[in-house]
Image 1 (cartoon, one colour):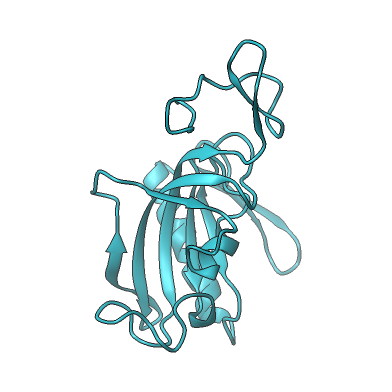
Image 2: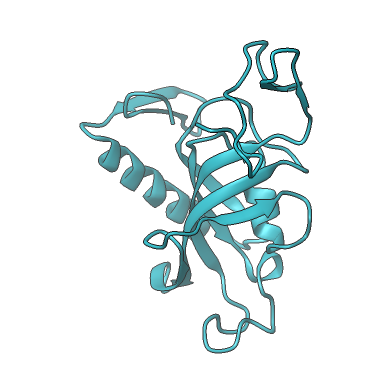
Length: 189
């Protein structure tokens, strides 16, 4: 996935191909189908598959960073998307999580590494990386493969200190200071 509704890929002979889409939605829909095709062509899904939909900007997130996420989760059924089992997209509250804290399923911890603020990613998570044989009563059947579309809305990097001008500066960011943090510790943008 590249900026301006543009994607590149390599085929089996390592030849580079480019596709330009007429809209952001068309580019994202295509990328989702690529991820589903990767899943369906895999003999055994034993790790998290992910496909970037939008790259976002800034530093990629690492373990220990705090994020605010908008997401939708579907059951993977009949080689494609099944019913939605969870979403916070039309709700007022974003999901807050600290990567590496073990508070979310292992597939999220793995699949969200390297995402950037404003980035969107499609995750296909096998049962062993999700809720396993127990599932979630009334929502996720046992041994379910899950699909999530996640968007990083806000990021607080783990290594932040205050600069002499009082602005928050991340040691992993560019030298330019980020906006003054608001009371919850997330940058004001």
